[in-house]
Structure formats: structure tokens, C-alpha cells
Length: 335
Image 1 (tube, rainbow, N blue to C red):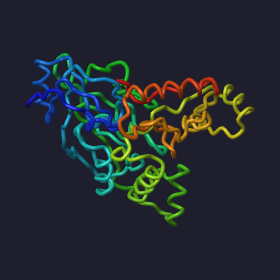
Image 2 (cartoon, rainbow, N blue to C red):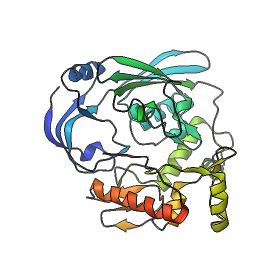
Image 3 (cartoon, one colour):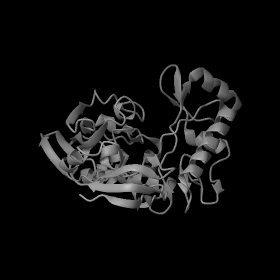
Image 4 (cartoon, rainbow, N blue to C red):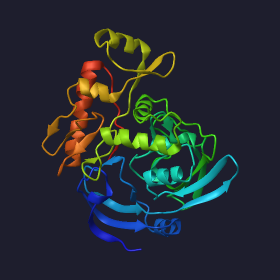
């Protein structure tokens, strides 16, 4: 292992923000990481770089997690149990599962990032959340260098949330994630409006895992910019959950406001719609702005700084609150 100095992190974050790491090292195994933690405790982790906005140079040792590998732990007629190392690309893992007829995560196709970060915010899309397939998460305790195992229940999953985002944040490094996926009698989730429309347009009535995955990929490509072409981190804000009483009052002023029922007392409102109504969709401010097709996505068109994008996010939050009295919550980690 070699520690490098003054390394640009532009290629290590999907926003394409050019900040420097004072010191940088890439680790390829849990053993290497354990050896490193014996001498370095104050570290900054980076994996796929898909859920962060870098606003400044990093003085800590930046550790790039590059663990690779997928293993089949066991299987039976109905299910397969997999353990996937943290450095595996998420979308490539989804495609591998689809190719092998392993069902459960096909709706999560084309989500940026690596497998190790998927449990942290319980990634979800098109009616599916990753928590529904995770059996356990293995992580290395930074303080002791010892491996720990968290069951699905212990991960305390919630909407875009987990124990790794709050109670044990900064204390553990996820090294692998284990999944239980179906081998037959797949419970396909094709009822989500956009997927259903995409399948209907192709005259597909009995979809396969690949059909669902292809539909999701087509939908995401039509709405979301490719981080390799335009820097972004996918959805920048969470969809807010508000009281039904608040929603009814808003509905009187904005009859077309969309919503999803969460419970008898709560309603989820699409953040993208709120941002669009606030006038930000497609707005460009030099090198940065809000994507023209999806208002949830903030973008770096070239040489924007992380702080510029963060200031835009704060302005969006301010205007949305003034207009709707809804406090948007940033989904991306601001560094």
C-alpha cells in the first residue's frame, strides 16, 4: 500500500468536483484496511463517490475502498444467498443478478455508487427498497479494527435511512453486504406508473427480470443525466413527508399537487414537483444549476465548486419553504 500526496478527487466523486486530498490511499482488501487502521484512525472514506458533495479540500487521509468480489454463500430451489464486497459497482451487480435470474433488486437498476453504500441510505426506486433483500451487513469498527455483523433488523432501516447514517455514523466501515434473492416465482414490481407505461409501450404483458430492469434503465436515462457526462449525485433532496392536514390546506391553493399516502395522517409529496413550482427546474447559473428534466437533480456543468452547488441547494430550500411551508431535507452528504 502506498500513500499518495495531493491527489485530485475529481474522478472519485460523481459530481466531478475538483478538490484535493492531502494524502490518498486505495485499499483492496479488509486485511489491508485493518493494517491501515492500526496506524491511521482519522480517515475520510470514499467509495463510489455517488452520495456526496465535496465543498473543500480534504486534510484527512482519504481511503478509497476498492474491495471486489461476489460469492454465493448458499442456495436452495427458491432462493440464493449472496455476499458482495463493498467496492463492487451497484449497477453492475444488479445486471449480474438479472443475467443469472436472481430477483429482487431489478427495480434498482442504474442507481450510481457502490454496493457498500447501498445500506447506508437504504437506496430505493420505483417501489423497491434495498432493505427488503439485505440479510446482513458486515462492517469494520474503526476504533478496534474488528469485524462486526449487523442483521437486517439491527440496521434499523427507514426511508433513506439506517443505523449507519445516525447512531454508528463514522464508527464503522462497511466491507460487504449480504442479500437473499429469488430464483423463481419472482415478485415482480411492475405496478409503478412509469414502469407500467414503459412496458405497455413495448407491448410486454408478462415481464421478465430483464424487462423490468430495461424499463427502469430507459426511464432513468430519459430523466436523469449520466454522471460521466454531467456531474451530479442523483436525487439531491428527499421527498418530504407531511401531515395530511397540511396537505389538504396546500391542495386548496395548489389543486394539482401530487402525493402518495404514507398513513392515515401522513402524505409524501414529490420534492421535484415542489422545486419545479418554485421556479428552479432547468435553471442554470454558469457552471452549475438544476437539471432540465428532473428538478430533484442538481448538476455541475463544468468547473463548479461544491460550495456553489451547496448555496444553490440552500436557496432552493428557502424558496420552497416560503411557498409551501415544507422543509426540504438534503439527501446528499455535504463534506
